[in-house]
Length: 312
Image (cartoon, rainbow, N blue to C red; front, top):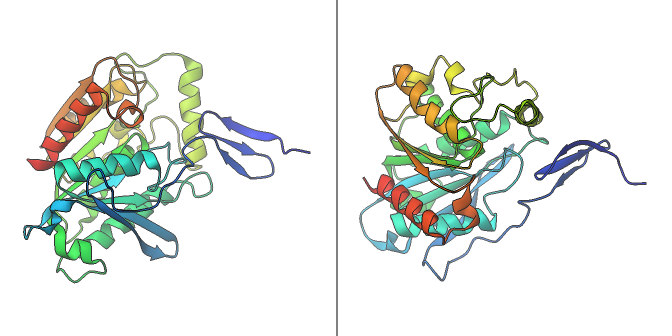
């Protein structure tokens, strides 16, 4: 007899009463390789054994030049519970980013909820940043980072839940410091932020709002509600200490999270943070459209904006 469903979070995953998890999307993987289209090489590197955590590194063809390249540390999306660094969606996207921006990329393969609930993803992402920083003297464990990565020009970025992680890593670097790693900018793509009171054009439908809270509770059992600083930056007293003075936020007109991206700009400015934030909205598009349809005109334009940010 088939196990009964305990919690249904379609279209992402289902949790069954016998404890097993059925992920409905984001399960495909591709190996690291040399990409014929872009000339970008990639490899998987384990940087922690307990817990077992790895990252996929990307090296553009132009890395043969003597000058060290900017480093992008990327956190994939998927609601903290689906997708991986080896997903074809992210593998193809980061091949393109590495090639077009001419940057080295570290894509963090953090542990996922619900098997490993938050703060596991935050802890793994922090461990990844510490590992990256261990290359500051050019004698770290990975040759690609030693030889090609400029740790004085590091960018943090992610989409959706990954943008949430990038935000929290920016806060942690701001408070805990991280010797040997200088963050030149943070890019948040359709960030997963929320709150108890609707902002802007955000939905007021109580069922949809309750679902978002329930979903976050699945990912983080210690979650205290919609105004928990995990998903509501406005509630975080340390927001003004965000480590970078350059923030780029992408939002999409049809995305349920659109207004939160705009509101992030507002609460940042109120927090005492003294940097520069730019919000770029794509009309007529929905959440992470650029990953679903990377060749469409709006995705190409969005890539140009991201590349410019990484090259300034």
